[in-house]
Image 1 (cartoon, rainbow, N blue to C red):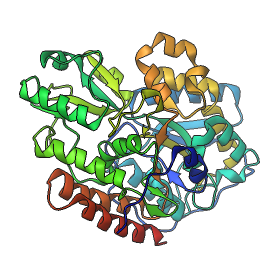
Image 2: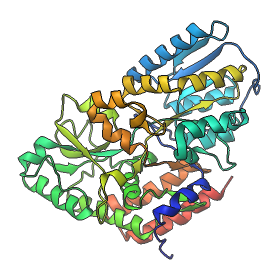
Image 3: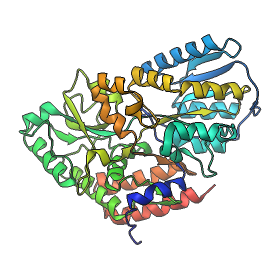
Image 4: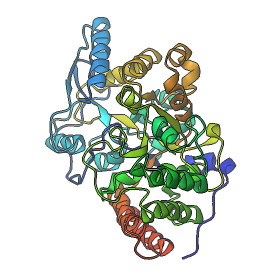
Length: 443
């Protein structure tokens, strides 16, 4: 199979408008294994109806704080349209809980924890309201989120999710371990694949850390969002996993990324066995891929720095792309008072509430000119500023049919050819791309 060529970055925005995407999982690595393809139960609700509604939000402690204050603020101003809120019910995964609620016809009006990778399945179940059907639906989303909004449209050009917040994945490194290895902790040589590999060898050879980096080597489909995908996004100036209905990862750039990671595994610079714990916080690995959520987690545990993922030739940090690790909001068809739900959704994603989200969670609202919109926050919290800047250059997992299966097909090829080191990467990626193309072409 002929290798794909790189898409020039000046043409990428135009292509994205014709490619339908979807974002990836947020701060938790616990994602769906499977979603039922059942039809939704219950009524379709009322697009013009107003009254009380129910919403679910994440059980993340800081997001609960945000959700409670948002609901309190709305309820104080709207006594006739009250919001009842709760954490997403416990289950194997939040996506399975939501899928089951759609089938039963008792989904809440809004879920502020909707994984974009699950949106095609929820849409297939008939569970999601088309937000574009509201008079100001498209204009509100596009004005708030800007060009990145295009990545959240479905194949029919409509929005079935509100782009909400992202956690752009960057490369964290332990300054103390770098210093112990004789490396410059303030200006680490990590910009290119060659520099990264040399630095990794020094870290391990010096005994400063057992491994240079330790992304999860397990086979779940979403794990590729934290090793392959941010590296691929950086290498290709923001190429998506699937564009124009076809896999892109079996390009020269995709194979280059695979070879880079294969070297790390082959030389024992990256761990091949699942680690029970946080390898970065525990000092077992000198580097980690993580988003801004990690700033508070590692605050007292690691003297850290963060840089973009490396590329073959090096890219200026202000031009680097990465994976978004986003979570969005769905409005569900079981909702009886959809007009109220839409107003609540706009209230919850207003400039004021986005500021509260940023303040309370450290996660990046999917809003244009984020650093310019909240200068006081970023001045007071400089550790988050690079993530605020990076949030404008992110890629999503594609919003396509059988998205989970497509990513699993790729992960299986990655595990065998890159982590285990069996066979030729180009051949493995070609075979995986053919399988992905077949999967996404199915209804």
